[in-house]
Image (cartoon, rainbow, N blue to C red; front, side, top):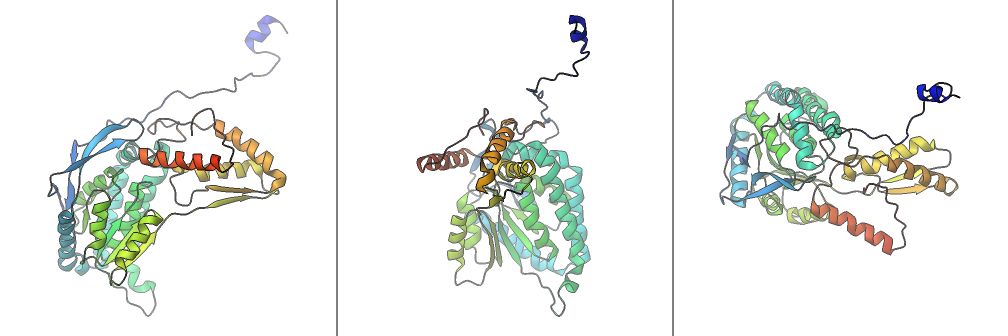
Length: 380
């Protein structure tokens, strides 16, 4: 083949460099209406904490401060519970189910209208890739409110021979791995059933819940129907210990779940605990290996592995073990670790320094116990 033919790509087919890379494509934060300081949402208004104390919430990808957030005390929690109880007695429990559904529907539509803002906020404050926030978390949160808006006026017919009744004031504590989605999972069904809410988001990811508070305020819900208090463990403890809360809904670690269980023992307070897990993937020799490897990667690296049912154990039939490991290594080399706001990023930022230290500690334990660690060219 002549030099000219080679230059024009004739006779040998197209030749591609296999080491492709993507140019950065970061999502803009220009549409975010970030505040320098966020207050508590109590009784339909944003109010300062009694103590005047605030804490910083940071971007885990850069460790730069995003904003100051109110640190709620037991007194602030008491104010929120009183507002929720008043709203329950005067307004929410007396509304028709259809009317409650209309309010919930408004929230769903408002989330859709501000979807881009929610997605950027979720990735900025929590570290998850913008693709996941934009394409999964925010649409699902809106869908969840739509779903329960439809259920609100059907509860009386859902259980034959049993008339549904609201519980009262629900105290809800959510974790940092799915901040907006967890808030939707907790708030929407509680409202549909006629309950009022005091919600505490995780201290490392409070901004999505506070943006949701703006949406709830704009939707015109009666004051006190939803209250959002921010803070660390002592704020959550104040919710659990409050005598006028009828139901505790907690999602978080098994360790804290046990503490809550002990605190509520002997009390009439109802509770649900959604705690940690240790899920396994099992690969047999007749599996489609490439598809199985894709499932393994998605199961453990989706949302940086910050999922209670993440596939953190892998059991492989011995006859295909070497093949699975080899293909898994090749697939891991293609993962892009980077800026959570970049649309090309597969794995964003670990949520907090504390969580990163926990992961590294387990890696050390694994190696000390005889494990062999494979590390891709980009630290994962």
